[in-house]
Image 1 (cartoon, rainbow, N blue to C red):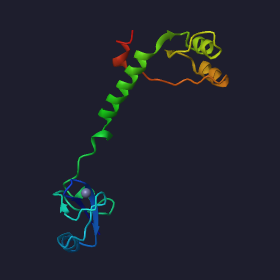
Image 2 (cartoon, helix red, strand yellow):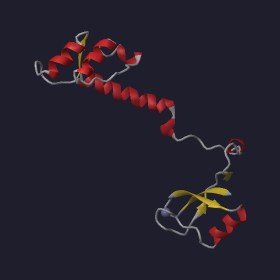
Image 3 (cartoon, rainbow, N blue to C red):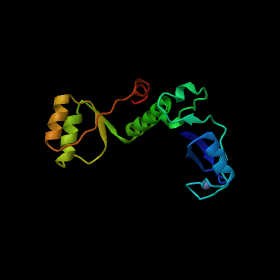
Image 4 (cartoon, rainbow, N blue to C red):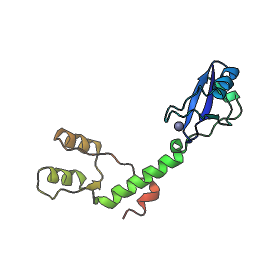
Length: 148
Ligand SMILES: [Zn+2]
């Protein structure tokens, strides 16, 4: 089985599975291959290395494709930093009074707002039992200095 990277005239990229290299050439040249997105028959092969759909075979092909950018740890970390920054910007730092403040808000003794602070595992557990949800947030060291 051959798996080829194909592209239609509208730049949709998709995979084509063929019995063999010859079969692939034959089907493409006779316009038998159709784009799954728009139905276009003007399909061309992408220059990437064809690969066998056997696990382990791809590593030996030589032309390994780069990983999609969204999956790299650096990008995920950047996204996380951004999310944490947003949380820091939109919440009030109540420090050690976190459990107390969360409880006061829950029982309408304090205005409802976003708060952050520190709480022991016991406090978090106690809050959960009272129906008060909290979210653990790990703040990277790089952001801690600018948080105050
Ligand atoms: Zn298409």
